Amino acid sequence: MKTVLKNKSGVLALILAFAMAATLFGCGKGAAKPEKGKIINASPSSGETVPILPESLRTYYATYKDPKSADPFMTGFDIYQPVPVKISWTCEQEADYYVVGLSMKKDIEISGSGDTVYFMTVDNYVEVSELFAGKTYYYKVFAVKGTEVLASVLFSFKTENYIRTVYIDGVSNTRDLGGKVGEGGKRVRQGIIYRGAAVDSVTKQGKADFLEKLGIKTEIDLRTGTELSVFRKNINVVSVKAPCYINNDMGIDLPEYQAELAKEIKVFADPDNYPIYFHCAIGRDRTGTLAFFIQMIAGVSDEDIMKDYLASVFSVAGSNGLTEGKASDLSYGLLSMINWLKEYSNGSLRQNVEKFLIDIGVTKEEIKAIKANILEG
Image 1 (cartoon, helix red, strand yellow):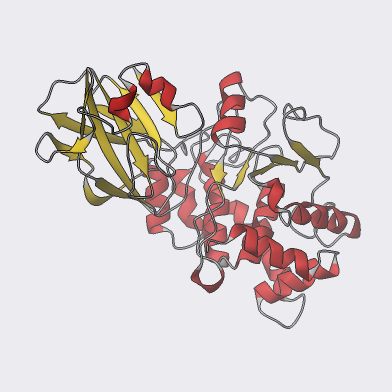
Image 2: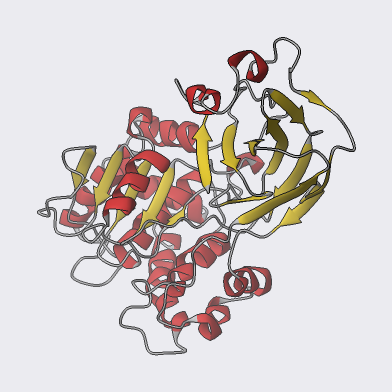
């Protein structure tokens, strides 16, 4: 029995159904206060690093050397889904239920502080999924017994810093584009750009998570430009006939596809469009092409882009059409495009990418705006 309470308008009414208002708002005799030694043995609790990815994906990222590093991990199944972090504790005082406040800020109070997310449970643990990668989280446990509230001291842990995958029921190959180091050492913001496969088969729960948990405001459909999205009544949908790599009948070297690429890129210049989810059919080739350009604008290294790109083979959709054990075959298309762009002008790869985008109709102001939108700080 677990209920997630998010710090939004009216949410505290859910807590008040279980305890007196004066108690939970820190007023009067039963006000919550830290009492060391009452809530003990919390885990994780000492700033340790915890995994948020399945073992195979963690091993891939930790041992990556070149595209062949992906070959042993392609199974044709969805094995990318995030691993929940289990927060557990023991309490010397009997409790009717517990409330856990979790935040990336230290000011956690049961009355609803900052950006805290709340979990309510009658067990002595909660499981939290899809946390940001490479971030420090703080939490407090509140034990509620009648009108009395006992607050723990502040605990903390850090999430492993690889990539952040997400789970959307009925959709494959889904992950956050953020977390990587970009221009000036700044990281790409997490929680604002997601990539994946088509959403045509999304379930009712998946649709709710897409709109409410991820808060998607814009869907970019990279297929033929004619599909009708299941989300068309809920969010802004941009449909394009997107390019894919180079030297084919839909490459970025063809004028008609260059215009479509420019249309895709411009979506990221408007801050009101975020969070954005973009996809093609399987979330790999046309999706990987757009992901490359957005990450290049942000200043992400080509190696980090390749690692993220090959992570598609950890999914059913992303491994579609590949021979078992040949995940690295995917790298040919992306590498061919990278090599073409290296020769496009006389600058660095990143400089050539920006020149190419300007040449096809993306303005310098739009590129600057994209950087401002997606880079931290």
